[in-house]
Every structure is written in structure tokens, then in C-alpha cells.
Length: 357
Image (cartoon, rainbow, N blue to C red; front, top):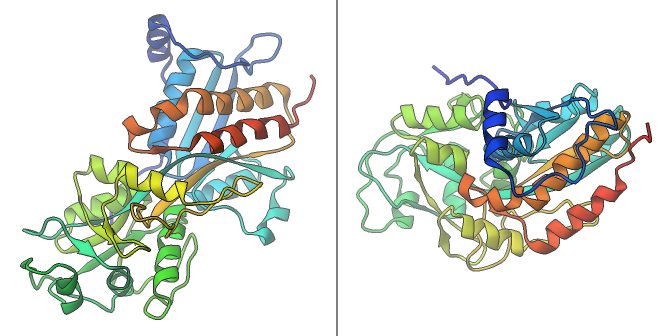
């Protein structure tokens, strides 16, 4: 039975907002986003479940700082988030994978801007009784998820873990059921390190073998791994931590086995190049301490905003992310961006075209 997890809707109740506001806030958004009348405005977003915990924390704090702006965010997967923004169903999208160039003409609002927010490890979480401190080389990992390794006591896993007693338990591979940036980044890693054994390519969705199991969203994969003996799956650090899952250390580009930590994610981001459009790729980044399956994540918005109040609110929220939100990253199991990347993202805010009235 596959785990089904309802999309997470992040809306701050008014009573909580008033309580937090009464306690005070050290950072006010530079623009209320509510227009000259001071009336309220609502922003709707959808997408990545990977970034949802970070979004929830920042939205809560932002609402306390500006009670005129309400932000609703549904964690429905990066693929659906991009689709919703394409059709202008939402005001912004959360995504861990950027649109293909061939998809960009489908965005009804014109040019989109990419605002990176945080990064985090994609854990390889497992449920194997009596096994802790598991290590997996890149090629062993690719063979497991390609279902070419089907037992936990396989010689390849044993070779990565000398002296560890491994059971003969069958392996159950768990993956995302929905279009997912987490899937995109995880399969990009497998495709990069071992395209011979991993032949399914990379993308928000891939054609998984029929013997595998699917969960909805990162929470759904975490739940399936937690409930299935012998399971292994890929889950963001925040959801894997909440589910109290065991994580494997993964062999990085330098040949070192690295645990999925924020320090490892920060090292991977530091070894990446930020392009002019603020896209970047920390997957399998160089560096002895870099965790190799580190995921970026972005908020996507239209460059040309069609409504002044909403445009001001989008800008105010993003300013808040970069002025206050980055400081909230670690406590929510995310790695903050380097100062240089934050500076570039803040500068990109000037590209937002907001109507004068």
C-alpha cells in the first residue's frame, strides 16, 4: 500500500500572526506589498515539498512582520508548481528543478526569474534492522535504484561496509509518485556517476521498474521507508529527520564517504558556479567535504508583474527571504546560500517590473 500524503498548505492563522506581531519583529519587509491603500493582498504559490519546511517558517515570520500580506503555499511537487505558474494559476512556484528551454514559451506571463533560496542534502534513507552507519559508493547506489542489486547482503554493499553484518532482506526501492525536483536531482546524480548501470536518465519523473514503490511528496517517501522493512528511498533532510530515518553516507567525487549534513551541503554549494540567471548545479560538486546529492531550490516568479499590489508583495517577500529568511535556514534543516549568491539574488529584485498603479 503506497503512502498518500495530502499537499501541505502553509497558511498562517490570524491569531498566531497577531501573537507573533505583539512579540515584535526585528526585520520588517521594506515594502508592505499592499498598495497605497494599505489593503490586504494574498499571494498563492505551489510546488516543491523539498523547500516546504523552509517556506513554512519564513511565511510565518513574514506574516508577523507584515499582517497585510497573506501567503498560501501548497507542497504539490516541483512539476505541478511549474505547471501552475505556467498557467498563471499561482503567483509563484517553488521548484528544485528549472524549466527546460523548450518549456519557457509555455509560460503565459512571459519571462520568468529564478530566485535561489536555500540548499539541503537529499538523504538516502533506509530501513534495515540492526544496520547503522551504512556507506554506499556511487555505483552501488546506482545499481540499487536500478534494481540490479536486490538483497541487502549483496557483495557490492558488503564491500562498501567491511565488517558490517548485513541481512539477506530484500531491498524495496521507494521513489516519488509525483513530478519532483528531488527526483530530478537524485536521478541526475545517478546518471552522472554511473550511466552504464543507471539507464533511466534524469528528470522530474522517470520510468521506474515495476518492482519499486511510490510515495507522494518527500513526506510520502519518508513514510513508506519508515513503514517498510528493507526499504531505501531518497528524502530531503528536513522530512527524513522528522521521520527519524537512518541515512547512508554517500561516496563523493573525491572518493570520500560523506554524511548528509548541512556542512556537506554548504561545501557542495561553495563548489558550484552561479550563472547569470542564478541557476546553479551542486550535484556531484567538487570538494573533499561536499555531500554529492545536494539539491538547490528556487522561487520562480514572472519578471513582469501584472498587478501592483501583488507585485509589491512578491518583492517584499523575496526581500524578507534574503534579509531574514537565510538566518532561519539551519534551524529548519537547510543550508543558507553563500553571501555572494544572496547579493546576486537581491540585485535581481530590481528586474521585477511592477505596474505603477
